[in-house]
Image (cartoon, rainbow, N blue to C red; front, side, top):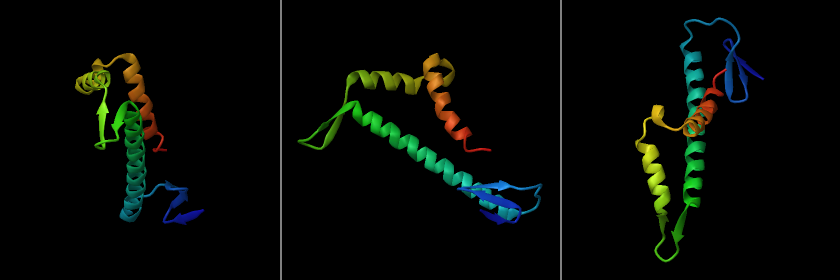
Length: 107
Protein backbone atom coordinates (compact mmCIF):
# COMPACT_ATOMS: atom_id res chain seq x y z
CA UNK A 1 0.00 0.00 0.00
CA UNK A 2 1.34 3.43 -0.94
CA UNK A 3 0.79 6.47 1.31
CA UNK A 4 1.59 10.04 0.24
CA UNK A 5 0.73 13.39 1.85
CA UNK A 6 -2.38 12.17 3.67
CA UNK A 7 -3.52 9.92 0.83
CA UNK A 8 -3.56 6.16 0.65
CA UNK A 9 -3.54 4.38 -2.70
CA UNK A 10 -5.99 1.49 -3.15
CA UNK A 11 -5.42 -0.02 -6.57
CA UNK A 12 -5.78 2.91 -8.96
CA UNK A 13 -7.71 5.10 -6.52
CA UNK A 14 -6.31 7.51 -3.91
CA UNK A 15 -8.30 7.83 -0.68
CA UNK A 16 -7.99 10.84 1.64
CA UNK A 17 -6.92 9.67 5.11
CA UNK A 18 -7.95 12.79 7.00
CA UNK A 19 -9.04 16.36 6.55
CA UNK A 20 -6.72 17.92 3.99
CA UNK A 21 -6.71 21.55 2.93
CA UNK A 22 -4.50 23.57 0.64
CA UNK A 23 -2.66 20.65 -0.98
CA UNK A 24 -2.83 21.34 -4.69
CA UNK A 25 -0.68 18.29 -5.41
CA UNK A 26 -3.26 15.97 -3.85
CA UNK A 27 -6.07 17.64 -5.78
CA UNK A 28 -4.15 17.06 -9.00
CA UNK A 29 -3.56 13.39 -8.14
CA UNK A 30 -7.20 12.81 -7.24
CA UNK A 31 -8.45 14.55 -10.39
CA UNK A 32 -5.98 12.64 -12.54
CA UNK A 33 -6.95 9.26 -11.09
CA UNK A 34 -10.70 9.94 -11.47
CA UNK A 35 -10.21 11.41 -14.95
CA UNK A 36 -8.29 8.32 -16.07
CA UNK A 37 -10.88 5.97 -14.54
CA UNK A 38 -13.69 7.92 -16.23
CA UNK A 39 -11.84 7.87 -19.55
CA UNK A 40 -11.30 4.12 -19.24
CA UNK A 41 -15.00 3.57 -18.51
CA UNK A 42 -16.01 5.79 -21.44
CA UNK A 43 -13.80 3.74 -23.73
CA UNK A 44 -15.23 0.45 -22.40
CA UNK A 45 -18.77 1.72 -22.94
CA UNK A 46 -17.98 2.97 -26.43
CA UNK A 47 -16.16 -0.22 -27.48
CA UNK A 48 -18.96 -2.36 -26.04
CA UNK A 49 -21.52 -0.36 -27.97
CA UNK A 50 -19.50 -0.65 -31.20
CA UNK A 51 -19.20 -4.42 -30.77
CA UNK A 52 -22.97 -4.65 -30.24
CA UNK A 53 -23.69 -2.31 -33.14
CA UNK A 54 -21.47 -4.23 -35.56
CA UNK A 55 -23.19 -7.46 -34.52
CA UNK A 56 -26.51 -6.00 -35.73
CA UNK A 57 -25.38 -5.31 -39.28
CA UNK A 58 -23.57 -7.00 -42.14
CA UNK A 59 -19.95 -6.70 -43.18
CA UNK A 60 -19.64 -6.64 -46.95
CA UNK A 61 -16.54 -8.68 -47.79
CA UNK A 62 -16.29 -7.42 -51.38
CA UNK A 63 -15.84 -3.73 -50.61
CA UNK A 64 -15.10 -3.67 -46.87
CA UNK A 65 -18.22 -1.69 -45.98
CA UNK A 66 -20.77 -2.43 -43.30
CA UNK A 67 -24.54 -2.23 -43.73
CA UNK A 68 -26.98 -1.47 -40.92
CA UNK A 69 -30.44 -3.00 -41.17
CA UNK A 70 -33.38 -0.60 -41.61
CA UNK A 71 -35.01 -1.68 -38.32
CA UNK A 72 -31.85 -0.68 -36.41
CA UNK A 73 -31.59 2.69 -38.13
CA UNK A 74 -35.23 3.46 -37.34
CA UNK A 75 -34.93 2.35 -33.70
CA UNK A 76 -31.69 4.15 -32.87
CA UNK A 77 -32.55 7.33 -34.77
CA UNK A 78 -35.75 7.54 -32.72
CA UNK A 79 -33.85 6.98 -29.46
CA UNK A 80 -31.16 9.47 -30.47
CA UNK A 81 -33.75 12.19 -31.11
CA UNK A 82 -35.77 11.49 -27.94
CA UNK A 83 -34.97 13.49 -24.77
CA UNK A 84 -34.16 11.29 -21.77
CA UNK A 85 -37.36 12.31 -19.94
CA UNK A 86 -39.42 11.00 -22.85
CA UNK A 87 -37.71 7.61 -23.18
CA UNK A 88 -39.59 4.47 -22.19
CA UNK A 89 -39.05 3.11 -18.67
CA UNK A 90 -36.88 0.29 -20.07
CA UNK A 91 -34.73 2.76 -22.03
CA UNK A 92 -34.32 4.97 -18.95
CA UNK A 93 -33.44 1.91 -16.85
CA UNK A 94 -30.77 1.01 -19.39
CA UNK A 95 -29.28 4.52 -19.15
CA UNK A 96 -29.44 4.38 -15.34
CA UNK A 97 -27.52 1.11 -15.43
CA UNK A 98 -24.77 2.83 -17.43
CA UNK A 99 -24.83 5.82 -15.04
CA UNK A 100 -24.29 3.44 -12.10
CA UNK A 101 -20.95 2.45 -13.65
CA UNK A 102 -19.83 6.07 -13.39
CA UNK A 103 -21.13 6.46 -9.84
CA UNK A 104 -19.20 3.35 -8.77
CA UNK A 105 -15.97 5.26 -9.43
CA UNK A 106 -16.73 7.75 -6.64
CA UNK A 107 -16.25 6.62 -3.02
